[in-house]
Structures are given as structure tokens and as C-alpha cells.
Amino acid sequence: MKKSILILGSTLFMTAALFASCQSSAKKVENAKEKVQEAKEDLTDSKTNLYDAKQDSVSDYQQFKKEAEEKITAHEKTITEFKARIAKEKKEVKEDYEKKLALLENKNSDLKKKLADLKDDGQNKWQSFKVEFNRDMDKLGKAFKDLTVKNTH
Image (cartoon, rainbow, N blue to C red; front, side, top):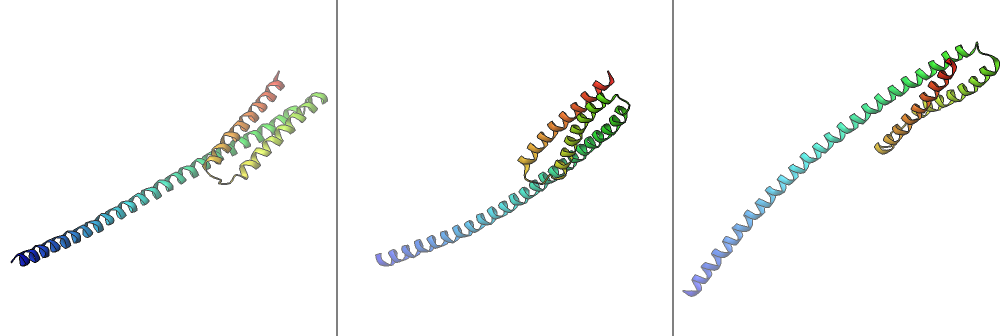
């Protein structure tokens, strides 16, 4: 009798353990499925965020390039107008202005080429290019302004 109770108890224990382990596997599978689904959602969100960031960067680049091209064109117009104005000056003054104007023309052309050669080398390089380019454009604009102000006095 003790043996049969012991066998029956052991069998019940084994059955309970087997049943408990089956539930545990099913739960593990369910948890794994949930984690996979969450990972897929995170990946989708990351892709969307990356796409949005790239679109913002492209839009920023296009806006910057358009504005820079407009400034360069304005400088070219200023050069043409200034050449017409200095044509009437005395020879010595005219030569001095022509030298200064030639330097400014070269700088303007260099900036135009630099803008045309711009490539997508990453966000950090883009930001440093933008800062450097804007600084150079501001210097050139100030030089044009200084040159024309001196001529009017």
C-alpha cells in the first residue's frame, strides 16, 4: 500500500511538473512573440524617424543652397554695377578698384565652385561646411560694402 501511494504520488508529482513546464514554454513563446512585435514596432518607428531626419536635412540643404546662390548672384550683379561706375574714374583710382574688384570676383567664384562641389558627407561635415561658407559669404559681403562705400565718398 505504501508503494502504491508512493507510486501514485510520484506520478501525480511528475504529471504536475510536466503540466507546469508546458505552460511555462507556452508563456515563453508568447513573451517572445510580444518582444518580437515590440522590436518590429521600434524598428518601424526608427525608420520613420530616420526618413524624417533625412527629409529635414535635404530640405535644409536645398534652402541653404538656394539662398547661397541668390547671394552669389547678387554679388555678381554688384560687381557688374561697380565696374560700370568705376569706368568713369581716374586711371590711378580705377586701377586700384579693378585690383580689389578682381580679388572679390575670385572669392565669389571660389564660393560658387565650393557650393557646386558640395557632397553629402554626413551631418557633422554639413554643419561645419554651412558655418564656414556663411562666414566666408559674410566677409565677402562686407568687403563689397566697404569697397562701394569708399567709392561714394
